[in-house]
Image (cartoon, rainbow, N blue to C red; front, side):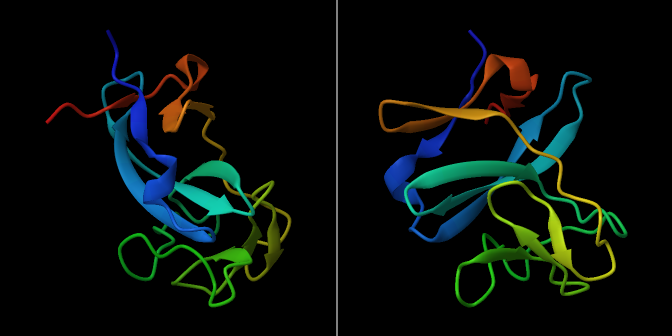
Length: 121
């Protein structure tokens, strides 16, 4: 059976974020992250659309100081937590690539439709 469980919901603060390494359908590693805000979970590919750089400014830190927006540590671009749209910065008009997740009980899981799976350690 394919491994799709990322984490427990309670492992992420609200607001909070955490990064994960997964495998795509081509067998390549892909960095993603999950955001927990106002009891809602969203997930994104960890890549700024401006230059393709990772977003976090230190491990598992993807949010601004207020926990209201995703922020790119390289360019300071701000992204909407709900839809990934760039709200300001050099990538205005672009957005983050979403990752399909679901909650099953208290678990955060990748959906089968995401085409991603967890790296087996």
